[in-house]
Length: 330
Image 1 (cartoon, rainbow, N blue to C red):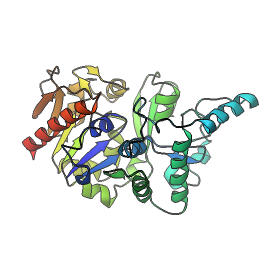
Image 2 (image 1 turned 45 degrees about the vertical axis):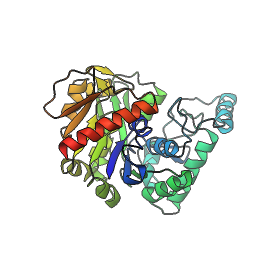
Image 3 (image 1 turned 180 degrees about the vertical axis):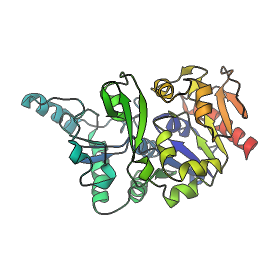
Image 4 (image 1 turned 90 degrees about the horizontal axis):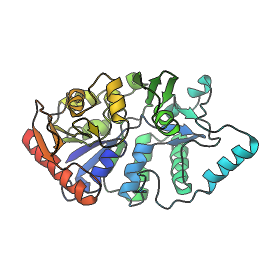
């Protein structure tokens, strides 16, 4: 048995070729929900859905977002209506009092659906409608995720990191903004002063997550701050990581990041934007998988390989390196 911590696209790219190394029936994927937003009244769970769609062979592998070949009728009409009515596009937060009113799971991350700033295809939207309606019926996010995983025939056990709301808030010179505004709405351009996991102090891990974390853990090459950081903010997860073997794949080759805003966010969090900084941030990790070209000297066991994840064969190679590293520390 093995448990993957997943956020963004790094861990899903690893999962794509890991079946022969880590059989899906014996694998659990715990997903970051700090990036979740309520958009137009519907709860969108990007990191959960990437894993669900990947497992169901539905994921758009060009963007690693949404469902492949999805239609765009509703998204197109939302933007046409906003333009015709003279409504501003871009991220439109609900008012402060509306941020914490109503649906508990959506707190601190609520946006208007006018001229949606995040692209959502029509089939993708049906997932969010179903999720939100089931939550309103009284089901937990864990239970809803299990139902959706069954609907997509996703082979892994997929768990949200908590049933409680946590929002990744990026503090910038322009003021605080949800991670999705920073990354999607502003294309990651604002300078970052700090990152807050709002609600983390009040959130707790579910029994299902804590049970999964009793197994050896693989942290894929996800963003250490906004993909893995929200999980660590949830009560119970950090402590569990210290008690089980953990192998982490660096999203850097020395000081070169493969993709995303990890360098900017690590620096804002006080870490060197490089593999050395990832190792310092992941003080709970027992071993690392680094790229062949990464000469960083770490104080923990290291397995080196080509850590590109462009193809399924790449993913299988990196997964095998993770298995070798787990054998060293288990």
